[in-house]
Image (cartoon, rainbow, N blue to C red; front, top):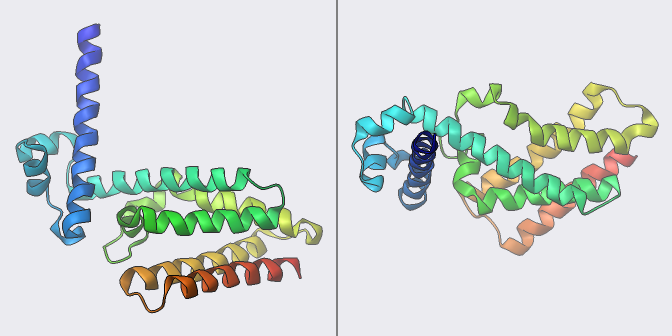
Amino acid sequence: MASKDRILRLKEETRINILDASLQIVKEDGWQALSMRKIADVIEYTAPIIYEYFSNKEAILLELTRKGFLILARDMKSAKEKHRLPAKQLEAMWLAYWHFAFAEKELYQVMFGVDVNCCELCEIMPEAEVPYTLISEVIEELMSPKKPTEDEVSVKYYTFWSVIHGLISINMVRRPTSDEITQEVLKTAISGIIRSIND
């Protein structure tokens, strides 16, 4: 039994090493440099070994996308729990989203197709729904006196997401302004949308 557990542990370690090597390659050379051969070189295995764990590069991208959504959900939940008022929760969650995008830039890029072809399978990934659910629940709570429909909540969520994702994308692709101005734009956008919910 101990031998079987050891084999499973070694397999999981190899799988994690493959994903870590993939991220290392991307951080150093960009997404266009990622290949099964290059991953094999980094972890000092042969390419066929990599295929035992992931059928192709897209499978690695899918797993990195899943990892990104798990980290993002954790960060957003943690930010939400620090506040009691829905407006403060929304602000904190969107700021956590913003910080995640730059702290985990490569994961954000693959999750949302910024400067890389996005993994189409992430649309069926349950982890991808968590940020939407977290934010939507708070928007609904903030709008509760108006008894909002699901569509009205969705409109507010996508208004937030469009503005914040757009600002992140602009800053990842090119840096048009200083960090201070970008932060001011971000906070102004968040507070403006929150005010529109309260009106």
